[in-house]
Amino acid sequence: MSLLDVRNLTVTYAGGAAAVRGVDLRLDAGRKLGLAGESGCGKSTLALALLRLLPAGARITGEVLLDGEDVLAMKWGRVRAVRWAGASVVFQGAMHSLNAVHRVGDQIAEPILLHRKATAAGAKKKTGELLEQVGLPAARADAYPHELSGGQRQRVMIAMALACDPRLIIADEPTTALDVMIQAQILRLIEQLVADQDLGLIMISHDLAVLADTCDRLAVMYAGRVVEEGPARQVYEDARHPYARALSAAFPRIGDPASRFAPQGLAGDPPDPAALPSGCTFHPRCPVALESCSAQDPVLRAAGPERRAACVLVGPPGAEARGERATAEPGGRGKDPTDGPGALEERTAEGPEALEEARRSTP
Ligand SMILES: Nc1ncnc2c1ncn2[C@@H]1O[C@H](COP(=O)(O)OP(=O)(O)O)[C@@H](O)[C@H]1O
Ligand code: SF4
Ligand SMILES: [Mg+2]
Image (tube, rainbow, N blue to C red; front, side):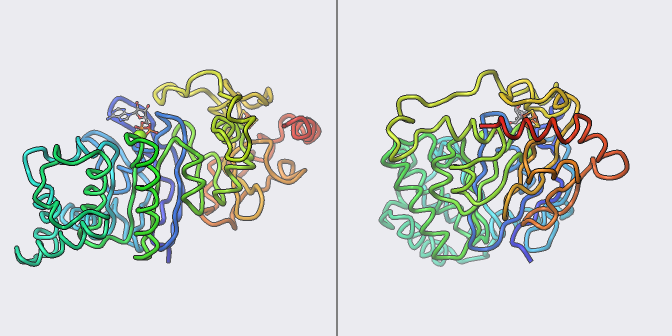
């Protein structure tokens, strides 16, 4: 059984914004999954939905199985316990997440007292151990948040996330607000803790390079959907989906000085989730879009061993004509709303020859 198994997750905000649209993800203990995509593509919404932390009025459907238990079907008391002991989130901007008027030690101890039913002395001891685990002296427990640097505050946030020995850590842009040197330290710390304690990690970032360096697998989101998923290095270095390729090209490569001076951007803005384009939501910005892309909404399909991508141009030659899609890949469960009578005809509306031609001309 996977540590986390997300099935067909959708989130619609009260105003009608479909921020997450049918996401399937799977993560085993001890594994690290990176979640990438431009600002507004739904990464934080997905993270919040996993622990039901969304604002009132947001509608969630699907399943979030944590060790086989559906978080979306739990009673609130159980959800609160799971938030600390099952999975916990490290947010961006530790200054805003910590309470400015309480000592950091007391803030770390609070969930230990509450959820672990520890004594005051036991919670204090555990707090000291946690601070040392994240590279801070135990005596820093007496500090107030403003007495710590940005990197130290983020370490406190990580200590707090580890307070009740969770099995899964969700880190949402944990290093975005930090300078580059501290960023690297915090990333190495998270990697070390995950490895030492056999935790699962979901690391969210807009920075594909950081994720490729830290994670085993990488999922790239666009307009509320995962459009590509696979081994992190492969997705970063040889993305199959045109959006993932553009995102990857936007980051300079180590050892490739040319890319440093000519990072390629992507024209246009991500779509408004309340007014998504028809067909493939990426088609207005896609440099290799076919005419049919404004009408057909491609689902994830096999894009190589343990890889999936949601693009009509992806797959072995002829795959489109045969209607092949990913069902055997990790995370692929064959939930294809366009499968069934008519789906094959829909996907091959332009004919296999047109697809072949487009594939050949895809860079
Ligand atoms: N509380 C909210 N109410 C309505 N819409 C929201 C809310 N939070 C986020 N959104 C919208 O949902 C989309 C996804 O946002 P978010 O999950 O924060 O993206 P990301 O983390 O990838 O930048 C955005 O279009 C955003 O404007
Ligand atoms: S389906 Fe069409 S528009 Fe969408 S990414 Fe592929 S080629 Fe581009
Ligand atoms: Mg976000």
